[in-house]
Image 1 (spheres, rainbow, N blue to C red):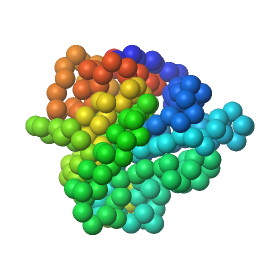
Image 2: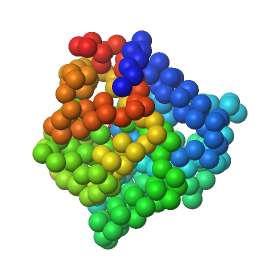
Image 3: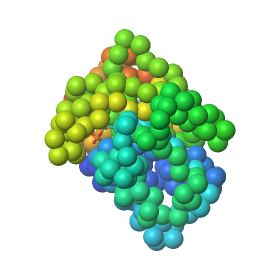
Image 4: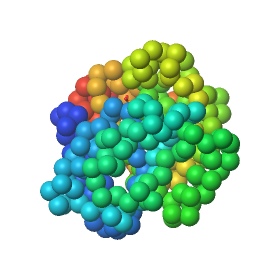
Length: 241
Ligand code: GLP
């Protein structure tokens, strides 16, 4: 894993946006894997700016999001569908038919996940995958467990993630307890990965992923085995390295 320590979250966003832009310049039909959470919001702001300034064209780009709560209505303002429209998609010229997010409204989650994995394969795989990280080391919604799943799958959220994500909902009881997520294999098959880690509260988990140990207890530690992963940290998140 390549590590870049940035001055602050703004610089993390700038470098990540430049890496995505470079991929789109290389191939205007790139497949970009996207993440939700508060960490990539700054990155999406930069990408919007680049589009508005006429520096970036998303008309050929295809996107696949990492995960979605289950069950959840797309109209729920806490759905990742809504988040992505609000923070990025409705501000750039990506084509609606090129946007993919696991469907939190589906009636058969197992079938939805198989179809999602197949769509990624049919698109030729992910060129560049953006990741944030949970406080417990989860990526997407691959939570710490004795065994991790390879492909896109339905999953249960841990109490720690429900607690961490409750800040976005009016009460903890409203946080869905399940999700649909790309698996560890789906993520590891991406040709390149950018992991964004910002804030002092992420310093302990950042230290763990650079400890030289790979364990299912810290799903993000598997990124150590990926040939082309860049971890962008701000100084606060890197303070224990
Ligand atoms: C959620 C998402 C993850 C994200 C994590 C961290 O649980 N499923 O993809 O990385 O939150 O969120 P934040 O960036 O707000 O700390």
